[in-house]
Image (cartoon, rainbow, N blue to C red):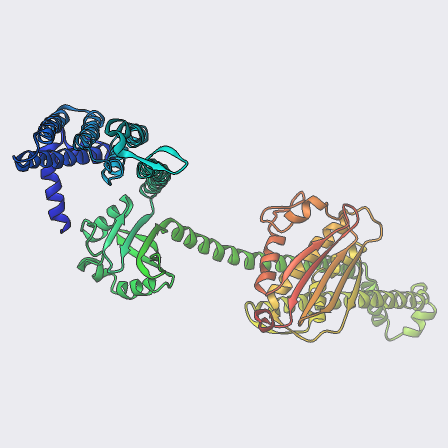
Length: 623
């Protein structure tokens, strides 16, 4: 029978026999009501059929009791149906039905004198019906009644007919009655065991359903409460579930309300996402699919990140796809701002590096200019106190007495003093000439130093951002030259420990920027350090895997262990007038060169060593 026809038949039967709407009844009570009703109707029809077909020629001693039993049971079955119309529970009608059936069956068998009534199949059937309608206790009561009928009532009422004499065994009940009693109790026992198993299974099922419902409720609450887009589709792309965020977003973006059971890919959706069919097929095959889509939203843009994941059935076959979407507009904006900040930081780093180098240039030029000023002042002082004017007056005096120059030199008092005066002036002019020549040499040397420093700055500035082969010892010497004057003036000893290394392919300006900054920090550390032995050591050494190492070590103030992890952070400094940018910028520059900048220090007052680790070429770093 088709399901729809069976449901309609049950609805008509329920309307006819049940006391109230079946939906108001518990499932167990509904089944017992239906069974009691059907059993009462069938037994009523059986009794009416018996009354109509009972032969007239039957022995009155048998016919009359049977008519009485049939009429009584028919009335009781009809009463059961009437009782059910007002009953709130099926228990009382079921008890009346089972009692009528059992008592009627026993009375009919006794009236007919049937010695095999207890072993008939009806006996366990009555027990089964009672067990189903009244439960284990009710079923046990009717099982006990049928057992008593088999082993006591039937032998006592029918007498010797039900007795069997066995040699040496005395009078025993008929073996068939004993077997019937055992079968009846066995039926009840099996029914009880089945009931217990069924109850356990139903309890486990109920608990599982409860847990499943609770999990489903929590999952539904979680999915509905999230601001992310969540939906699931079947293998045909039809919408199975959709949370509030998905429904809202779909309506805003495509002007349609997503309907369960309808395809997600409506025409407006496909116009915006022509790649959807292919992505859906890939996800259905089990491939992870993730796409990021930007939607125009007025003057702004809405960025959504979608991930598609396959749903499989119990056999592992694709059954659908889940779609998760997240609004990543804020993240994209933050990434854009971060990129802009990074570009600004890089530009600031480059400017700071150029400013650091320019500061070193100006510092050296300024120190050299001090020497130039001293030399120029000495030359000016010598020129101001020169005896050249006296020599001019002496020659003019000699010119005036040219005609009688001999007499003037021998007889005139001034003439006699003139040779000695000329000799003295000549010695002084010679001394002045020697002194001014030394100062002029110093001036020339200092001017040459200024010119070389400026030329070096111009040379490095021309190669900003360009990767070229650099001779590392020469580059370190250039960095030292920027601090040469101040290092000499402060009495700082410079040690060079250069291991031969091949030319380095690097951005010359960035590396020089790092070295100048490290040398400037080392100079300050040595000035402030307690050790009288102020040493600055530069080392170059080769490292495995085509890398090299540059160490800038000093015997200055040192660094506390708790400050080492913070040393390269933006804004961190231990100097009174520091800005906390130099080492941070240097660390960034070292990373951009494919290397790293680290620091070690035994502790305060014990110096520090800054280490630059670099690849020999950018290609080695990428490898």
